[in-house]
Amino acid sequence: MVVSVTNVILPNCEKNYIISILIVRKKFYNKVYKSKISNYNGEMLNQEKQIEKAVQEAFPMSDVIDWNEVYQRIIYRYSSPHSLQHIKEEMYKLEDKGEIIVHHIKPYNNPVEAQTLNGIPKKIPTTKLWHHKSCGQCGHIPGYPTSVFWVMNRLEIDYLDEPHQTSCTGWNYHASGASNPVALAGVYVRNMWRAYETGYFPLIHCGTSFGHYKEVRNMIILHKEIRDKLRPIMRKLDMDIVIPEEVVHYSEWLYVMSKKAAQQKKYNLDNIKAAVHTPCHVYKLVPEDTIYDPEVFQGRRPAAPSGTVQNFGAKLVDYSTWWDCCGFGFRHILTEREFSRSFALFKKVIPAVEEANADVFVTSDTGCVTTLDKSQWAGKAHGFNYNLPVLADAQFVALAMGADPYIIAQIHWHATDVEGFLRKIGVPVDDYKEKFIQYLQDLREGKAEPQYIYPKHRKIDFYLALPDRVKWYKPQAQK
Image 1 (cartoon, rainbow, N blue to C red):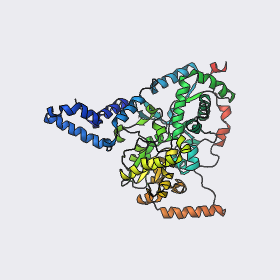
Image 2: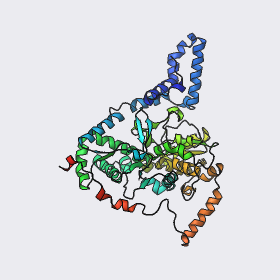
Image 3: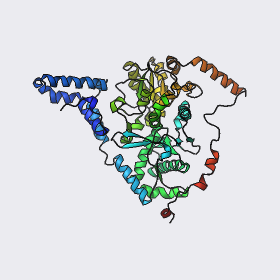
């Protein structure tokens, strides 16, 4: 029986992803069918042609991809003895034993279920959210987190911008290796405890924090020796081991909310060709926890941020190096920076421009935006003048909804020329720029107050009241 590629997507994404890879592997055709092709009747030949056509439509770059390499990645991916389902089963067993506290997603979080790579539903809370912000976003791309908050304000989402959050220490973990499992677990649990005691569910901004926290969660659940060393440390802080029911990235939230957000779209994106880079640390660390959707690249790429771009009306364009790292990679951005810059330009930016004719590059992590955006000036210094504007999906959405490109999206922090893209979709850039320059002048002269994304000291009484309201010890844990 011949299966059409367009009908491959079924509820079990894991199984069908492998099937789809097998279908499109050219060597599979060459070895299995080449010797038999002369025996096919007209109907079978027609089915072969239909499959080839469907493959080309679903995978525009299929002819230049080494499918053997992709297949080996799949085998490696599913060789882990600890599946996501197993992790969650063990987590609930530990909760029943009183060894950990699970921060459950509640009905008041208005969760939306999305499908993960291996078919297990993942609950994405949509409101009453606790923001775990990104060091790099706040330091290098401030328009990134402000765009997230601005979109939430427009959608009337209840959230907390936590003032007592710490770094996830992902720099230590990925770049220097200067930490240890118990320390990493302590930082993770300390931050998750803060969310738990507020009653707001954590939403992770940074892709590295997201992937890192999923790995640390698995480590805590699977290794009793880690829990035994971690618990006394947390007790000294009047805390206990808390693990959220789901680890959720903001781009997943943005994706499940994107159709609703697109109802407030101010500018037309129909003529925009958008290339997407999905961050490695979002979908390659604990990959089975990544959400997919048959409506997004036929379910063969992660749903976010591609689905968000698609739901806002832009045309998704494909390019051969979609799988590759942006060049950031943590360790080599520190030790081999010129390699990072060259890789970002030659392996990501140039293919997106020359193969896909993209108008904009959209991604969803701190390092990816920084590297893809700020590496292009290095290429320009050597005569490679590829000016492809790079935006986070949150900036892309906020700008499409009418956010101020300077006060909110803060495109002046970008190395590439985002203004050209904005003019193409109809944004009155010059008016916004004049207004922004005047705003800065008024601030210098004391004629204006700074604009805030939300009122200063929002809910400070809520924070101060926390210690009296939170009861975290289970009765058996007090003994």
